[in-house]
Length: 454
Ligand code: BES
Ligand code: ZN
Image (cartoon, rainbow, N blue to C red; front, side, top):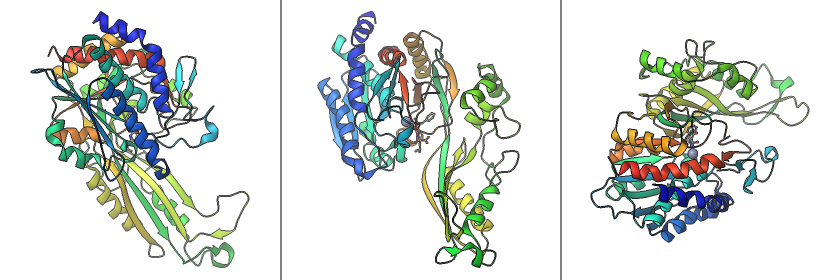
C-alpha cells in the first residue's frame, strides 16, 4: 500500500483546495432559493468521479438530484456502496460565524465552513482515497458504487423511492458511510448505533385574532399558555417521557453493553465544562453516554407565539406553534411513535383551543452488527489510517438511509466517523481537522484494500 499512501500524502494540498471549492457551493437543501446550488454541488462530485473513470449519472428526482458513480471491473471481488450527502444545513445565525459560512477558511489545522465535516469533508475523504488508489494502481481491488444525495438534511424524502427503483443497480455486499465522528482526538471509531427520529409540529389556535390581554385575558384561553402546559407534561422531573406506550419497544442496554460504555474514557465534568452548561440533565438512572447513545429523548426544537420583539406588548396571542422531536432507539418505530404522540397531545388539549399536529420527516434507529468480516476489515483500515486502535461507539444523530439500505438492499452499513465530536455540525463555525481529513483519505484507500482480502 505504500505507493498509494505516498501518492495520497503528496496530493494533500490539492485535496484541501478541491474540498474548499466544493464547500464554496451553498447547497442548503431546505432553502428553495438554493436549488441551483444544491444541484451544482451534486455536479461537482459527478464531474470528479467521471474524470477518474467512474461511470457517472445525475438522476433528477421531484426534489434534489441523486448522483451515482460506478467502477465495477473487479470481477469476483466484493462490491462496496459508498453513500454521502452533498446538502448542508442552513448556516444561520450568520453573525456567529467568524467569516462567511461558504468562504472556507483554514484556521490553524482546521478547515472552517458549513459542510466541512457534515458531510462534504467526510464524503470527500472517501472519494479521494478511493480515486487516488485507482489513479496509482489503474484499477480497484473491489467494485465501488458511489451514491450521493442532496436531501439528507431534510429527511431524504426522495431517496427511498430511488433505492427501490434502482435496487438491482445498487446491489452491494456492504455500505460505507462517513457522516459520524471519532470518539475523540486520536480515538477513531466505528459507530454501531444511530438514533431514529420522530419530528412533529403542533399548532394551537384560539380566537380569530390577537386580543388585548387586559380586556380578554382570563376570559378567553391563551394558546401560548396552553401549549407550554402541554409541552411541560411530555416529560417528568426524572427526564422520562410520559407519552403512554412510548417505552414499549425500547431495547434496554444489556449489562455487558453498559460495562463496555463505562470503559470508554468519558469525563462528564469535562463535557459539562466544554458546553458551559450550568448542570447536566437527563433520564434518571443512566450515565451521560447512555443517555446520548441509547436512551430515547424529547426536545422542543422551536417555539413561536405572541410578542417577541423589543419591549412589552400586552397581547393575548391567537396562535402558538411548537416544533419538537423525539430521538428514538431500537426497536421504536417512528410512525408508531408519531401516532401515539399525536393521540396523547389531543388528549391533553382543552376545548378552549383547537389543535393540529403535523408529522415532519422521520428516521428509524439502527444497530449495526460488530462481528462481520467487513466490520473487522474496516477496523483494520481505520487503525492503519489513524495509527490507533478504533473503538465501537453509538451516536445520537440519525442517518435515515442506513435503515433503508438494510430493508431494501439487505445490507449493513459501516459507519466510519472521521470528524470530531466538537466539529460543530449544524452550528456556526463548523470545522474539520485537516489531519483527520488526510487520515480519512488514507483510511479509505486501506478500506478497499482490506475489503478485497475478505
Ligand atoms: N451527520 C448527521 C448525523 C449525525 C449527527 C450522526 C450527529 C452522528 C452524530 C446527519 O447529517 C444529520 O444531521 N442527520 C439529521 C437527520 C434528520 C434530518 C432526519 C439529524 O440527525 O438531525
Ligand atoms: Zn450528515
